[in-house]
Image 1: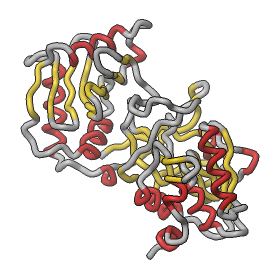
Image 2: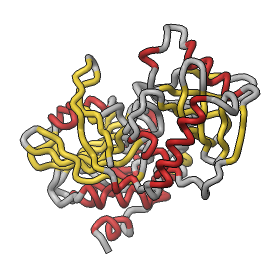
Image 3: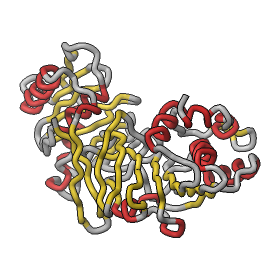
Image 4: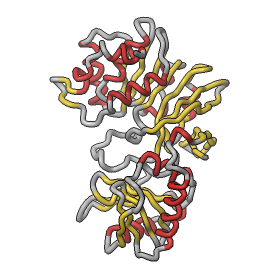
Length: 340
Protein backbone atom coordinates (compact mmCIF):
# COMPACT_ATOMS: atom_id res chain seq x y z
CA UNK A 1 0.00 0.00 0.00
CA UNK A 2 1.05 3.61 -0.56
CA UNK A 3 1.47 6.19 2.20
CA UNK A 4 -1.77 7.83 1.07
CA UNK A 5 -3.67 4.53 1.18
CA UNK A 6 -2.33 3.86 4.67
CA UNK A 7 -3.35 7.36 5.76
CA UNK A 8 -6.84 6.96 4.28
CA UNK A 9 -7.40 4.02 6.62
CA UNK A 10 -7.14 6.42 9.58
CA UNK A 11 -9.16 9.38 8.24
CA UNK A 12 -12.97 8.99 8.45
CA UNK A 13 -14.07 10.06 4.97
CA UNK A 14 -17.82 10.17 5.65
CA UNK A 15 -17.26 12.17 8.83
CA UNK A 16 -16.13 14.95 6.48
CA UNK A 17 -18.29 14.38 3.40
CA UNK A 18 -21.53 13.64 5.31
CA UNK A 19 -21.03 15.38 8.64
CA UNK A 20 -24.13 15.11 10.84
CA UNK A 21 -24.09 18.82 11.64
CA UNK A 22 -23.42 20.19 8.18
CA UNK A 23 -24.92 17.51 5.97
CA UNK A 24 -23.49 16.17 2.73
CA UNK A 25 -21.01 18.33 0.82
CA UNK A 26 -22.86 19.05 -2.45
CA UNK A 27 -19.86 19.00 -4.77
CA UNK A 28 -16.98 16.76 -3.80
CA UNK A 29 -14.23 14.83 -5.57
CA UNK A 30 -14.11 11.06 -5.83
CA UNK A 31 -11.95 9.78 -2.94
CA UNK A 32 -10.05 7.47 -5.31
CA UNK A 33 -9.07 10.48 -7.42
CA UNK A 34 -8.07 12.45 -4.31
CA UNK A 35 -5.81 9.55 -3.31
CA UNK A 36 -4.26 9.50 -6.80
CA UNK A 37 -3.44 13.22 -6.78
CA UNK A 38 -1.99 13.06 -3.27
CA UNK A 39 0.13 10.06 -4.21
CA UNK A 40 1.46 12.07 -7.18
CA UNK A 41 2.11 15.01 -4.83
CA UNK A 42 4.64 12.89 -2.89
CA UNK A 43 4.08 14.49 0.52
CA UNK A 44 6.48 13.76 3.41
CA UNK A 45 6.51 14.50 7.12
CA UNK A 46 7.44 18.03 8.09
CA UNK A 47 6.42 19.59 4.77
CA UNK A 48 4.54 22.86 4.34
CA UNK A 49 1.62 22.18 1.96
CA UNK A 50 -1.08 24.36 0.40
CA UNK A 51 -4.32 23.12 -1.10
CA UNK A 52 -6.79 25.12 -3.18
CA UNK A 53 -10.37 23.99 -2.68
CA UNK A 54 -11.19 23.06 0.92
CA UNK A 55 -14.41 21.26 0.02
CA UNK A 56 -15.55 18.90 2.77
CA UNK A 57 -12.17 19.05 4.50
CA UNK A 58 -11.36 15.40 3.73
CA UNK A 59 -8.34 16.12 1.51
CA UNK A 60 -6.99 18.57 4.09
CA UNK A 61 -7.29 15.90 6.78
CA UNK A 62 -5.33 13.45 4.62
CA UNK A 63 -2.62 16.06 4.07
CA UNK A 64 -2.50 16.88 7.79
CA UNK A 65 -1.82 13.23 8.52
CA UNK A 66 0.80 12.94 5.78
CA UNK A 67 2.83 15.98 6.95
CA UNK A 68 2.60 14.91 10.58
CA UNK A 69 2.86 17.08 13.70
CA UNK A 70 5.93 18.95 12.42
CA UNK A 71 4.28 19.88 9.11
CA UNK A 72 1.63 22.45 8.19
CA UNK A 73 -1.32 22.49 5.81
CA UNK A 74 -2.97 25.65 4.48
CA UNK A 75 -6.36 25.12 2.84
CA UNK A 76 -8.07 27.85 0.81
CA UNK A 77 -11.63 28.11 -0.47
CA UNK A 78 -13.79 30.92 -1.79
CA UNK A 79 -16.80 29.52 0.09
CA UNK A 80 -16.85 30.74 3.71
CA UNK A 81 -19.47 28.13 4.67
CA UNK A 82 -17.21 25.25 3.67
CA UNK A 83 -14.19 26.85 5.34
CA UNK A 84 -15.95 27.36 8.68
CA UNK A 85 -17.22 23.80 8.78
CA UNK A 86 -13.91 22.28 7.73
CA UNK A 87 -12.10 24.17 10.49
CA UNK A 88 -14.66 22.94 13.01
CA UNK A 89 -14.49 19.30 11.88
CA UNK A 90 -10.68 19.37 11.95
CA UNK A 91 -10.84 20.77 15.47
CA UNK A 92 -13.31 18.08 16.54
CA UNK A 93 -10.73 15.50 15.50
CA UNK A 94 -7.92 17.26 17.34
CA UNK A 95 -6.00 18.39 14.25
CA UNK A 96 -3.92 21.48 14.94
CA UNK A 97 -1.59 21.44 11.92
CA UNK A 98 -4.20 22.40 9.28
CA UNK A 99 -5.83 25.81 8.88
CA UNK A 100 -8.56 26.71 6.41
CA UNK A 101 -8.95 30.26 5.09
CA UNK A 102 -11.48 32.09 2.94
CA UNK A 103 -9.46 33.28 -0.05
CA UNK A 104 -9.19 33.24 -3.82
CA UNK A 105 -6.77 30.38 -4.29
CA UNK A 106 -5.52 31.60 -7.67
CA UNK A 107 -3.55 34.25 -5.76
CA UNK A 108 -1.98 31.63 -3.52
CA UNK A 109 -1.47 32.50 0.14
CA UNK A 110 1.85 34.32 0.62
CA UNK A 111 1.42 34.65 4.40
CA UNK A 112 2.38 30.99 4.91
CA UNK A 113 4.67 30.54 1.89
CA UNK A 114 6.98 29.10 0.70
CA UNK A 115 5.32 25.72 0.20
CA UNK A 116 7.00 22.42 -0.48
CA UNK A 117 3.87 21.13 -2.18
CA UNK A 118 0.70 22.59 -3.70
CA UNK A 119 -2.41 20.74 -4.82
CA UNK A 120 -5.59 22.12 -6.40
CA UNK A 121 -9.11 20.71 -6.43
CA UNK A 122 -10.34 23.47 -8.74
CA UNK A 123 -9.16 24.57 -12.18
CA UNK A 124 -7.51 27.99 -12.63
CA UNK A 125 -7.57 29.65 -16.09
CA UNK A 126 -3.84 28.89 -16.37
CA UNK A 127 -0.94 27.93 -14.10
CA UNK A 128 -0.71 31.13 -12.00
CA UNK A 129 2.67 32.78 -11.57
CA UNK A 130 1.68 33.38 -7.93
CA UNK A 131 1.70 29.62 -7.35
CA UNK A 132 5.10 29.13 -8.91
CA UNK A 133 6.52 32.08 -6.93
CA UNK A 134 5.28 30.57 -3.65
CA UNK A 135 6.79 27.10 -4.13
CA UNK A 136 10.22 26.12 -2.83
CA UNK A 137 12.98 25.24 -5.27
CA UNK A 138 12.38 21.64 -6.30
CA UNK A 139 8.81 21.73 -5.02
CA UNK A 140 5.78 20.17 -6.71
CA UNK A 141 2.40 21.44 -7.87
CA UNK A 142 -0.36 18.97 -8.79
CA UNK A 143 -3.31 20.74 -10.36
CA UNK A 144 -5.92 20.52 -13.11
CA UNK A 145 -5.07 22.91 -15.95
CA UNK A 146 -6.99 23.91 -19.08
CA UNK A 147 -5.59 22.68 -22.40
CA UNK A 148 -7.81 25.05 -24.43
CA UNK A 149 -9.69 28.27 -23.72
CA UNK A 150 -13.06 26.53 -23.37
CA UNK A 151 -14.58 24.85 -20.29
CA UNK A 152 -14.15 21.23 -19.27
CA UNK A 153 -11.03 20.63 -21.36
CA UNK A 154 -8.44 19.85 -18.72
CA UNK A 155 -5.80 17.42 -17.60
CA UNK A 156 -4.19 17.07 -14.20
CA UNK A 157 -0.55 18.13 -14.38
CA UNK A 158 2.41 17.30 -12.17
CA UNK A 159 4.61 20.41 -12.24
CA UNK A 160 8.13 20.68 -10.82
CA UNK A 161 9.43 24.16 -9.94
CA UNK A 162 13.19 24.64 -10.29
CA UNK A 163 14.96 27.97 -10.31
CA UNK A 164 11.63 29.74 -10.33
CA UNK A 165 10.57 27.98 -13.54
CA UNK A 166 7.83 25.33 -13.86
CA UNK A 167 8.22 22.13 -15.87
CA UNK A 168 5.48 19.57 -16.47
CA UNK A 169 6.69 16.09 -15.55
CA UNK A 170 3.45 14.23 -16.35
CA UNK A 171 -0.21 14.72 -17.20
CA UNK A 172 -3.18 12.56 -16.25
CA UNK A 173 -6.83 12.29 -17.17
CA UNK A 174 -8.92 14.46 -14.90
CA UNK A 175 -10.46 17.78 -14.12
CA UNK A 176 -12.26 19.71 -11.41
CA UNK A 177 -14.71 22.57 -11.14
CA UNK A 178 -13.44 25.92 -12.44
CA UNK A 179 -11.96 28.30 -9.89
CA UNK A 180 -14.26 31.31 -9.54
CA UNK A 181 -14.16 34.61 -7.67
CA UNK A 182 -17.26 33.76 -5.61
CA UNK A 183 -19.04 30.55 -4.55
CA UNK A 184 -20.95 28.83 -7.35
CA UNK A 185 -24.68 28.34 -6.94
CA UNK A 186 -25.14 26.60 -10.30
CA UNK A 187 -22.91 23.57 -10.58
CA UNK A 188 -24.30 22.63 -14.01
CA UNK A 189 -22.96 25.75 -15.74
CA UNK A 190 -19.19 26.16 -16.22
CA UNK A 191 -17.65 28.88 -14.12
CA UNK A 192 -15.61 30.37 -16.95
CA UNK A 193 -15.61 30.96 -20.73
CA UNK A 194 -19.38 30.68 -21.27
CA UNK A 195 -20.04 32.97 -24.25
CA UNK A 196 -23.81 32.61 -24.41
CA UNK A 197 -26.39 30.92 -22.22
CA UNK A 198 -30.07 30.13 -22.74
CA UNK A 199 -32.35 29.40 -19.78
CA UNK A 200 -35.66 28.91 -21.65
CA UNK A 201 -37.18 26.67 -22.76
CA UNK A 202 -34.34 24.60 -21.22
CA UNK A 203 -30.82 25.41 -19.97
CA UNK A 204 -28.09 25.41 -22.64
CA UNK A 205 -24.78 27.17 -23.19
CA UNK A 206 -21.88 27.53 -25.62
CA UNK A 207 -18.19 28.43 -25.39
CA UNK A 208 -16.24 29.49 -28.49
CA UNK A 209 -12.45 29.71 -28.64
CA UNK A 210 -12.87 32.53 -31.20
CA UNK A 211 -14.64 34.84 -28.71
CA UNK A 212 -12.12 37.63 -29.29
CA UNK A 213 -13.42 37.88 -32.88
CA UNK A 214 -17.06 37.94 -31.84
CA UNK A 215 -18.87 41.26 -31.36
CA UNK A 216 -19.95 42.85 -28.10
CA UNK A 217 -23.42 41.32 -28.37
CA UNK A 218 -21.95 37.82 -28.77
CA UNK A 219 -23.74 37.47 -32.09
CA UNK A 220 -21.51 34.64 -33.28
CA UNK A 221 -21.93 32.62 -30.10
CA UNK A 222 -25.69 33.26 -30.00
CA UNK A 223 -26.10 32.26 -33.63
CA UNK A 224 -24.03 29.09 -33.28
CA UNK A 225 -25.97 27.98 -30.20
CA UNK A 226 -29.26 28.73 -31.92
CA UNK A 227 -28.30 26.68 -34.99
CA UNK A 228 -27.49 23.68 -32.79
CA UNK A 229 -30.71 23.97 -30.79
CA UNK A 230 -33.32 24.66 -33.47
CA UNK A 231 -33.98 22.33 -36.40
CA UNK A 232 -30.46 20.92 -36.22
CA UNK A 233 -29.34 18.10 -38.48
CA UNK A 234 -28.57 15.04 -36.34
CA UNK A 235 -26.79 11.81 -37.11
CA UNK A 236 -25.20 9.06 -35.02
CA UNK A 237 -21.43 8.83 -34.84
CA UNK A 238 -20.58 5.65 -36.72
CA UNK A 239 -17.54 4.80 -34.60
CA UNK A 240 -17.39 2.89 -31.34
CA UNK A 241 -18.61 4.41 -28.07
CA UNK A 242 -16.95 7.78 -27.60
CA UNK A 243 -13.99 7.78 -25.20
CA UNK A 244 -14.60 11.28 -23.91
CA UNK A 245 -11.25 11.99 -22.16
CA UNK A 246 -9.41 10.88 -25.29
CA UNK A 247 -11.67 12.81 -27.69
CA UNK A 248 -11.66 16.10 -25.79
CA UNK A 249 -7.87 15.99 -25.40
CA UNK A 250 -7.42 15.29 -29.10
CA UNK A 251 -9.81 18.10 -30.05
CA UNK A 252 -7.98 20.55 -27.77
CA UNK A 253 -4.58 19.51 -29.15
CA UNK A 254 -5.68 20.54 -32.66
CA UNK A 255 -5.36 24.14 -31.42
CA UNK A 256 -8.02 25.11 -33.95
CA UNK A 257 -9.28 28.67 -33.36
CA UNK A 258 -12.86 27.56 -34.12
CA UNK A 259 -12.94 24.97 -31.33
CA UNK A 260 -16.24 24.93 -29.48
CA UNK A 261 -17.67 23.35 -26.33
CA UNK A 262 -21.40 23.34 -25.62
CA UNK A 263 -24.03 21.98 -23.28
CA UNK A 264 -27.16 21.48 -25.36
CA UNK A 265 -29.01 19.19 -22.96
CA UNK A 266 -28.62 18.29 -19.28
CA UNK A 267 -25.53 16.27 -18.35
CA UNK A 268 -24.28 16.06 -21.96
CA UNK A 269 -21.26 18.02 -23.11
CA UNK A 270 -20.52 18.53 -26.78
CA UNK A 271 -17.31 19.39 -28.63
CA UNK A 272 -16.91 20.56 -32.19
CA UNK A 273 -16.35 23.37 -34.68
CA UNK A 274 -18.29 26.60 -35.19
CA UNK A 275 -18.05 29.83 -37.14
CA UNK A 276 -20.33 32.85 -37.34
CA UNK A 277 -22.46 30.97 -39.88
CA UNK A 278 -21.93 27.21 -39.33
CA UNK A 279 -21.83 24.78 -36.41
CA UNK A 280 -21.26 21.08 -35.72
CA UNK A 281 -20.57 19.19 -32.47
CA UNK A 282 -20.28 15.63 -31.17
CA UNK A 283 -22.14 14.98 -27.91
CA UNK A 284 -20.99 12.57 -25.22
CA UNK A 285 -23.80 10.18 -26.15
CA UNK A 286 -22.43 9.80 -29.68
CA UNK A 287 -24.94 12.13 -31.38
CA UNK A 288 -23.63 14.58 -33.97
CA UNK A 289 -25.54 17.84 -34.40
CA UNK A 290 -24.96 20.37 -37.18
CA UNK A 291 -26.67 23.37 -38.72
CA UNK A 292 -27.27 21.40 -41.94
CA UNK A 293 -26.16 18.15 -43.62
CA UNK A 294 -23.66 19.95 -45.88
CA UNK A 295 -22.30 22.21 -43.15
CA UNK A 296 -18.62 23.18 -43.57
CA UNK A 297 -18.23 22.80 -39.81
CA UNK A 298 -19.62 19.27 -40.04
CA UNK A 299 -17.03 18.40 -42.70
CA UNK A 300 -14.25 19.67 -40.43
CA UNK A 301 -15.64 17.79 -37.42
CA UNK A 302 -15.72 14.57 -39.44
CA UNK A 303 -12.08 15.15 -40.43
CA UNK A 304 -11.13 15.59 -36.76
CA UNK A 305 -12.92 12.38 -35.82
CA UNK A 306 -11.24 10.45 -38.62
CA UNK A 307 -7.82 11.74 -37.52
CA UNK A 308 -8.65 10.80 -33.92
CA UNK A 309 -9.56 7.26 -34.91
CA UNK A 310 -6.48 6.96 -37.16
CA UNK A 311 -4.31 8.03 -34.23
CA UNK A 312 -5.76 5.17 -32.15
CA UNK A 313 -7.80 7.31 -29.77
CA UNK A 314 -4.71 8.38 -27.80
CA UNK A 315 -4.91 8.71 -24.02
CA UNK A 316 -4.17 12.12 -22.46
CA UNK A 317 -1.05 10.66 -20.82
CA UNK A 318 0.53 10.04 -24.26
CA UNK A 319 0.74 13.72 -25.24
CA UNK A 320 3.79 15.93 -24.90
CA UNK A 321 3.05 18.85 -22.54
CA UNK A 322 4.47 22.34 -22.82
CA UNK A 323 3.97 25.46 -20.73
CA UNK A 324 3.59 28.69 -22.71
CA UNK A 325 4.20 31.94 -20.84
CA UNK A 326 1.25 34.36 -20.66
CA UNK A 327 1.70 37.94 -19.46
CA UNK A 328 -1.80 39.32 -19.93
CA UNK A 329 -2.93 41.87 -17.36
CA UNK A 330 -4.55 40.08 -14.45
CA UNK A 331 -3.79 36.69 -15.97
CA UNK A 332 -0.07 36.07 -15.59
CA UNK A 333 1.38 32.60 -15.67
CA UNK A 334 1.65 29.69 -18.09
CA UNK A 335 -0.88 28.07 -20.43
CA UNK A 336 -0.61 24.31 -20.77
CA UNK A 337 -0.69 22.96 -24.32
CA UNK A 338 -0.43 19.36 -25.53
CA UNK A 339 1.01 18.01 -28.77
CA UNK A 340 1.72 14.62 -30.33
